[in-house]
Amino acid sequence: MSGRFISFEGIDGAGKSTHIAAVSERLRQAGAEVLNTREPGGTPLAERLRELVLHEPMDVLTEALLVFAGRRDHVRQVIEPALAAGRTVVCDRFTDASFAYQGGGNGLSLPVLEQLEAWVTEGRQPDLTIWFDLPPATAAARRAAAREADRFEQQDLHFFERVRAGYAARAAAAPQRFARIDASGDVASVAAQIVAVLEQRGW
Ligand SMILES: Nc1ncnc2c1ncn2[C@@H]1O[C@H](COP(=O)(O)OP(=O)(O)O)[C@@H](O)[C@H]1O
Ligand SMILES: Cc1cn([C@H]2C[C@H](O)[C@@H](COP(=O)(O)OP(=O)(O)O)O2)c(=O)[nH]c1=O
Picture 1: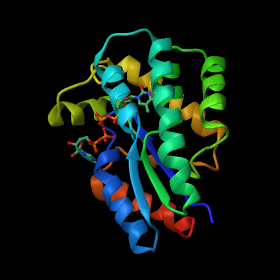
Picture 2: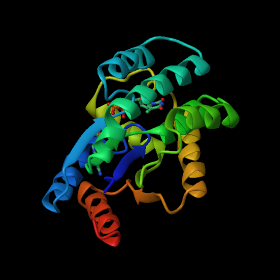
Picture 3: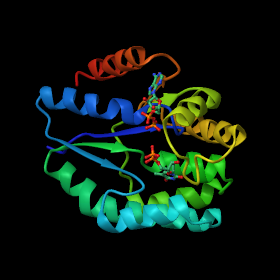
Picture 4: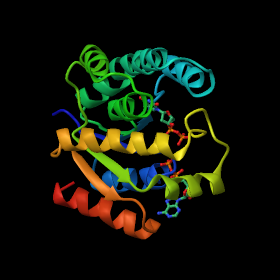
């Protein structure tokens, strides 16, 4: 039987990394063989592309072509084989991030993104996308306390408002797949919401 594919999404500083390990552990306890991976990245080639995307200046179409090139490699080398072997794939970001960041944040047109998505993922979508939603100012305060900013994290609040709107549009278009989490509360309240989402699905 094909495994489950779960992605985590949200603006930078939303709290994804804080919760991914615990969710993965919970799935393991329930009997799943879990593979943790991330985008941009997830294969040696895609990790090299990630370095370029996060640190080199480039126009938005170049950015999209690089993240989708990495995604193609990741889907073929890692995600599809793992799902075919019945594993649960837990991925820190996937195609929704391209619609949110390159589309919402940087203004790349929807038809271009839809074409790239169709070519690269060939209909593969996560079974569940856990979307950490919160005001950009809250996320920015968390980031500032935590780490040095990469190219995306240096953007202003308007940029992250557009990214957030990009996620909201993707969620509205696929309400069965998306679970919106109110990520503005404390760590315990976010964890409780995620557990409720998994329980709802019997996972
Ligand atoms: N619910 C929360 N309340 C307050 N701080 C949080 C919360 N969740 C995460 N943090 C902190 O915010 C920072 C960013 O969280 P992180 O999990 O790295 O976000 P992301 O992976 O989504 O960018 C970290 O320092 C983390 O400890
Ligand atoms: C997957 C993906 C990520 N990104 C951006 C979002 C993030 O700012 C950045 C890296 O994501 P992430 O790994 O979540 O950053 P960090 O390790 O700092 O928490 O890449 C895109 O712009 N497009 C994409 O398709």
